[in-house]
Length: 84
Image 1 (tube, rainbow, N blue to C red):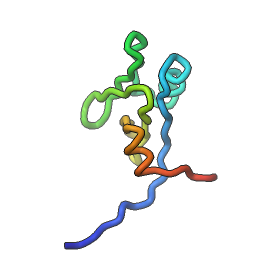
Image 2 (image 1 turned 60 degrees about the horizontal axis):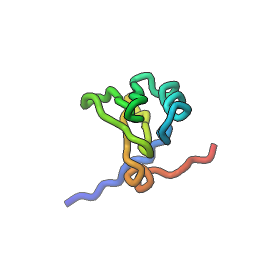
Image 3 (image 1 turned 30 degrees about the vertical axis):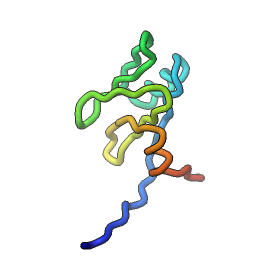
Image 4 (image 1 turned 45 degrees about the vertical axis):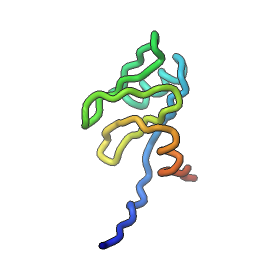
């Protein structure tokens, strides 16, 4: 069996922390998002269809410009901050 390492890729992401201020930041970052204020959730059109994001989820912009939500534990295990 061959082994492979994930290529190091720098991504852009915005965490949805809930509420209007956070939703506004995500909507500015991700035009594919729709905020449902009555449930404090986001709907994001992705390559795989519409996905939901809840408070704490990260919204990631992929290498081809696509957007998708990511759970905080997966984000933390996969990504680390980049210092410019």
